Structure formats: structure tokens, C-alpha cells
Length: 579
Ligand SMILES: *[C@@H]1O[C@H](CO)[C@@H](O)[C@H](O)[C@H]1NC(C)=O
Image (cartoon, rainbow, N blue to C red; front, side, top):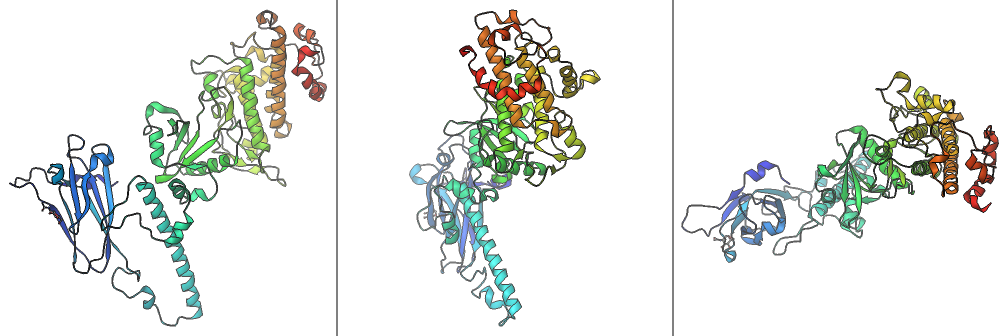
């Protein structure tokens, strides 16, 4: 609360070397009796060896201010700073303010301590700290019209600023003192009920929301405001053992709220200015969006210039950690398809769901998170931008995003469209299939970039040659073919040639249907015997009946015809046994 130096200058009574240990330590300050004074008394029990062994009285102007003050019951521990605020009543008879501490004889303990004192003079009705002539009387008697206007504007601005300041102070005190109880006796309790206007403005249901209303961000509905103390409690003071990850923006911790809700707490680095912009973007974006496949923001904290975001907790972490680089069990093909579909849904919603489309700009496998049921949710909206409005075709912007996922067209022309996200998503699709990083500089030159490498194989129709060895023989070839084609379209050189996220979503769902249909039909048999690893893919005609699907079908399907007919086929594929 106060600088360490203040606590180091604490006065205590201990071992005074006098016969009678029952005495007071008193400080006397010269004051102007016609003014009131704000007195803040700081304590910190740095002398006791055990709890509840220090109980004493505090007097101000010979009146008892706090009797039997037991710091350890108030702070629940030793060495914890604590303070109390008072306002001294104006007393015409004395031109000194005295503050004393003395032992509480009832408790039979003979020690007392005080760490520091702050005393502030409170201005009088004339808003003066010295005398009764108001500021107004010092101004020229009959000001010209111009001056009058200036004064009116000036005082209006001044008054507004004062109201705001008082409001901020009030909130600050409320936040700090929310757990304190008020004082009785001859002392006015704090917080200062300074301005009734501010009070009515803030008379919201709880102190928390009152505090929130002080914060610059809180002008619109931006989720719950957390006090820094709540965040500290939730994360066990940012316990390193709860660290979930470290990113460009800051560190992410696992936390548990008071009601038991698990959350992910992202703490921004307060010194990065880019961080502040991204912090705001993310709050503003996420509070507008609610979707099953977008990570939802629970609230935020910007107290003490912190930049903290509180999200729903995603038990299974980033998609990437289930692909490579960890010991986690490999995902099945069906799981991978479902995850990609979930992420595609999230992005589709971003692009089309809100009034103005939103471009994520940083689609990658670390920004796709999985909850306890492996439901994929898109995260990290720090770089998001609202997309072009109707009369524009693109948004011009400095290139941001992650290498390996960057749309080459966006990189060249710095023009952002939704199709840039589609490209990045194509990279994700390849990563999911091949379980290798988007960029791997260790590999031979032609393999470094997954987009280039996978595309050369996809064009030969041999994507199965470079896919995850865990999947070999366990993937329906038609499903893989559809998947490969979808990824290929996403990775098209020019944005106009790429499908929309809605098309991508549809195609992935179709790939999933193909996979589910085949595994449903093959259920009684051993799956692996029907798909010998290394055999080139044979396309499947969706109109064929279920038997020919097992056989592998006839080759040479016309892709366009297939696409055109898919909506009709789709419903039939849902229940293949019914035909
Ligand atoms: C300490 O000061 C208070 C207030 O002036 C007084 O009531 C009390 O008797 C004093 N205690 C001792 C031991 O002098």
C-alpha cells in the first residue's frame, strides 16, 4: 500500500526501558483549526512472532479512534500492510492534531505500533485551503462577453473534470475498502461521499459494477469487470505451476473463480503498446460475438494498468499440441475432421455472422483450442479487423499474422479480405493432415513450407504419401480426397479463386460424411483390410450405391458435377443404410 520505506520507519513501544509500560506514543501536528483534515494511518505488524499478540488503541485528538485494534485478525497474517482513514472534526479550540497509540490494558498486552501517517487538509466551502474568500471574488468584476463565455466554458470543463476525478477516487476507495467496515465514534467514516451526482450515476447494484463504470473501457457492455485481487485469488498470485502458455501478448494462466468456474487468464505485458491496442481489440471483438466455436470472453481487468483477459477454460488446449511436439495420443481422422469443421464454423460466423464481417488475421493451429469434449473453438482475436464494408472490396493494412500462414496475396498487396483467413485455414488443414509445423526450416528447401510441399503432392493426387503415419490405412480415400481438394482450393494463389469459409465448411462436412458412411458400412468387418496403405486414391462417385463404395467405385468422377449435385446427395448420405 505504502512504499516499503514507510513500513521500515515504524515506531513501536517494545522494551521502552521504563518502570511503567502503560504509556502512549503521541505525535503532534500543527493544524489550522478552521479546517478539517483527512488522516490515513498505516499499520503493518512486522514485530510480532505470532498472530493475535499485538492489540492496542489508536487515539486521534485524545479521542479513541480504534479500540483494541488487532491487526492479525484484520489482515489474517503478519507482515500485511493495513490502513484506516479518518477525518478530524474541525475543533476551534485546538491548533494541533494529535495521533497516539497506546497499549490496550484490557488485553493485557503492552505493545503498539504505527508505520506511517498521511495528513491532508480539506478545502473549505469556498474551495480554498486558506481563508474564506472564494476563488470567484478574485476574478475581474465585469468581464467582457468573450471572457464570460470563457469562464463559463472553463468552469464547466473544470467541474466535469472534478466530478470525474472524485468519481475515480471514489471508485478507487470503494475497490480498496470493499472489505473494510466503517468507523463509528467521533470520526466520519470513509469513503468520502463527495458528490451526490457521481453517487447517483454509480448507484448500480454492486460495488463491482460501480468500480467497472469508472474504467474507460466500460462505456459499453464488455463482459464482467474483475478486480485485480480476484484475479490474484483465481490464479494463486499467478502461480507459475498454473502457466498454460506464453505468447506474444503475454502469459496465460489457468485460474479458478470463487464459484469454482475454471478460466484461462491472459495477462498482457503492460509495457507493450501494441499489446494495449490488441487488448482493446480483443475485448471489443469478443464481447460482440457469442458462438459455440469461438472462445468466449468472461471478463477483463484493467485495474492498476494491468491488461488481463479472462476466458472460458479450454481443457484440451491448442489443436497444435494434439498434432505434434507432445506425447498426447494422435487424433483419429474423424476427430480431426470434426475439429476442422468446428474451427471452420467459428470462422464462417466471424466472416458472415456479425453486422460487419470480421477477419481474424491470425488463423493457426495454436489459435484453435479444444474443450474437454474436443470441440474446437477459435481464439485470439488480438489482430482481428472488421472486414471491408459493402462498397469496399478489401481493407488496406500493414501485414500482420504468423509466418507460414500468411496469405501470399495479402503479403504482396497488403489488402486484407476474408480470403486471407481462408488461406491460413488451408495451411491449418494441411498441418492437421501431415502433423508437421507450417514452417520447418530444418527440412530440405522444398519441404520447409507446408503449403508448397503439400500442394505439390496434392496436385499429383498423392497426399497420402506425406500424411501422418498414424492415419495411414485408417482414412476413407474418398474422404481424404475431398479434404485434399478443399485444402488445395483454400491455398489458391489468388483470393478470388479461394472458396468462402461457408464452402470450406460444407466440403469438410461432406468429407466427414464420406468417412462416417464408409466406417458405418464397414463396421462388421476389419477396417484395415479394405484400405491397403500406399495404394493411390480412387475417387468415388457419390451417386453410386453403398456397395460400390466399399469396392472403391469407378474412377474419373467429374468434380464439378459432383459439387453441383452434392446438396441432393448430402441428405441421402446421412442415412446410407436406408437405401
Ligand atoms: C493515552 O491517550 C489517551 C487519549 O489521550 C488517554 O485517554 C489515555 O489515558 C492515555 N493512556 C495512558 C496510559 O496515558
